[in-house]
Length: 112
Length: 116
Image (cartoon, rainbow over all chains, first blue to last red; front, side):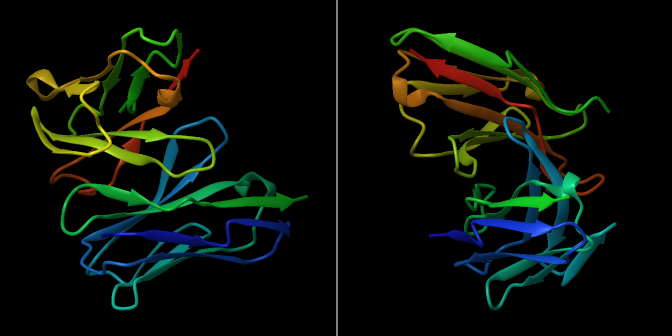
């Protein structure tokens, strides 16, 4: 059974810091992993999609890496800004299906 | 590309009533997903369509829940005889099968259901 854990659950940092958010999953037979951002009361916004054949993806100040063998992904946010404050979620498919399992997210607050 | 849209955005209903939500995916996306999210939790998978075929359904989707996607376009999620435990945000997502970035899910704004 696929289980997804995100650490830390919450994080508060001053503006300008570089951050690492962690996502771990129990079943490494995944074909992709997706990172999302969610603002309070809103839907999810896709940040990065990593296919199983890839090691990392970059978009602007965001970089996501994937290590399937160890069941881990990290989201690196460079030079954090108050506008980055949100909940960050990762999702992986369950055992070769299209049933996606989400972590409970990391609530990030970047202080000005 | 107008994104995924959901209607209504908010729904308040009394326990025992039936409700229906609609999702319009991005037009060229073959796959459509429904999720349920409660406060402080990640989205929880409910069901998934590829075109008009419902290919997976969570065990969480009891007999009171049904979803359809006629003609492989918009989808509806119906909850019959609502219970207070059904109060949640219902999210819809779509993804392309082959074009663009296959498998990347794009979410709608959600429908917030409150059962009183």
